[in-house]
Image (cartoon, rainbow, N blue to C red; front, top):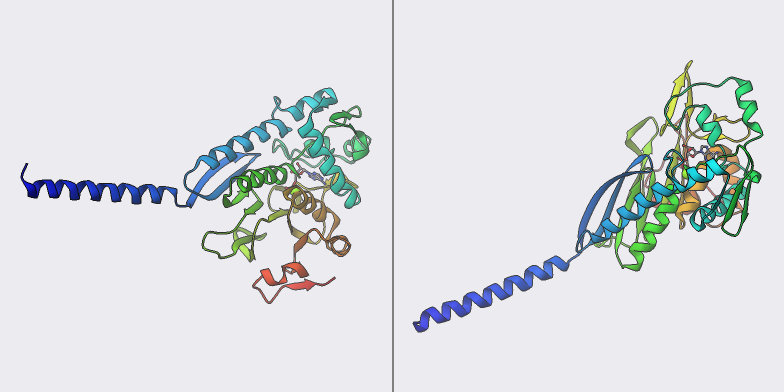
Length: 336
Ligand code: AMP
Ligand code: MG
């Protein structure tokens, strides 16, 4: 082989080596990886910053597994078995029930996971909506209440006729577990499990996470943007997420345990920001039931969450801890 050809060959090999080195370097770089998952009755969009999408596979498996266990409408779920038989020994269910019971206690019973028979009567689970007669609601009164659930370690016992529904807390609990998996792997990202947003770690470019809070009058658009750093759960409960209208009245999917009827108050949505997804999810539902004034009282006596209230007249109120995260001079800030 002529000397010159050998030189070209060597140069070619060198270029190839350099290129493959660069390419494998690129493959290790953290880029945005996106996935859409349909689970827990909602569309979920997951974004992680990682070299590949293997963490998304893991999250998808985790979420679909939790959905299978916690769904009240899937007859094969662990929850359906509990509702059918009135008893179960299950550490996951027990942990979720005890977390929900703690939030229920903090909110004077506004969160009540035993409302499933009532939700069914109004037709929410299968979208066969109707306004029940007062006697039908009265007949269910005796079946509802957190005191009808007994927990002894992992053993759960339901009083006769009582059935549970984790719709108010399951997505928040799932987001806590997704966050733990990503943090253990050193991966950052932003997960939207329906109305439950979970940020994990920091954005690779160092800018804060931007979270749009939906406009209840036009859910395809947003009412304000929150800018947050680090790992936070941002959960919204609103009367526009699932509802039906009859006789000019809007009946939303969030029920008041006192009246066994859809909440009717000045609120269109409540967003809770917290470190814990379970707390943010449970509280956003509960504070929607409690109304704004009771929510402000609870916030003043707590240190582990912040709130945004959007009212029917369009007014937006935020707690002090979020004042710096909201770029909108029309909002009212509640102080301690
Ligand atoms: P969320 O979307 O998190 O506010 O939860 C609403 C869902 O939780 C509803 O679709 C019902 O399945 C269930 N639910 C309704 N009202 C309540 C309540 N007061 N406490 C607990 N769960 C509720
Ligand atoms: Mg909730």
